[in-house]
Image (cartoon, rainbow, N blue to C red):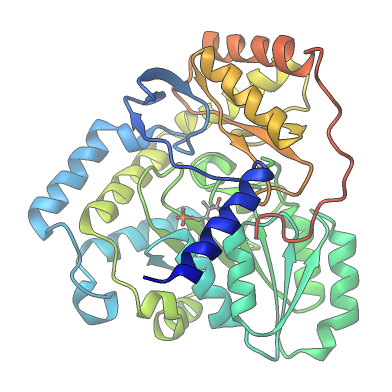
Length: 402
Ligand SMILES: *Cc1c(COP(=O)(O)O)cnc(C)c1O
């Protein structure tokens, strides 16, 4: 039908394959809180973002089924048309309460939230400053503003301050956006310091709490660690990780939420979440609020792992084992799979060149014995293996995950 199109795709694929960057989908069936079936094998997954195992929780599944029976499988239209079924208001009230905000707005996904919120608040005359290791959809949102995009060095508040000192006065508005818990590194943003800088330069601070809600800050997320309490006016996040389902959200002041509902394109022009997803998130947040000890478990498990390996103590349920080279990382992932563990290799461009890694994530239901065995294998057969090389000391590429 179109020879040049297929030729373009084939050549592009061949080039990616040569650099070990070809991505393929592997069918993976979740069998329970931590077990999956992949390629006919049962594996213990250390790669799910389902930190509280809520995607498999009986009461939450029941809430989703009940909502489907009552309201149907889809919402039928965007929320501003007829898709605003009665469960949305309940979920938004719960999210706002959990985050200590006046109001909340639920989106189709976290990706849709970031690509909608940022250009709704900043335009062509404005500036957006983004941590270099922020998630790809933050960069996508920042580009959609048409304004100036400044990338600051990872967690380097000094660098951010310099950028604002140099450029803030050229723009009517400035937005600072960063992950609260960095998705591929597991470290936390210095929220309190960022809030100070934002205040000093009259910039608006937006934190993407995708990997924080439910698991840090007593379950309230990364705005409640590192002295951030109550100082983040824009708390964005997703319902697809610890919350266990699907959807995105923003918690903010009443005025900001009203503006988002009126002006944010990914909210206006995209269908509302299915009732099942909204009901599941309501049940999940109830559980997170009721049981902070349960919410603390994934981090506790991650700390047991970093202690066993002599790594710096985990501050979130995400622990990276940076091996550097993509091929070596793929080999390490295969070795772990042979031992019954699923630990997915993360390669560029998801992470900067030369920093391919095993990304190990911990959930409430991981067994202490499995964590110990995993740490033992990683130490003896990956980190201390004869072919182990030091990771490339290449400078991180700005826009790591873009
Ligand atoms: C996963 C993730 C997103 C996207 O959320 P989805 O709901 O999966 O679209 C956004 N930001 C960060 C930091 C993430 O890790």
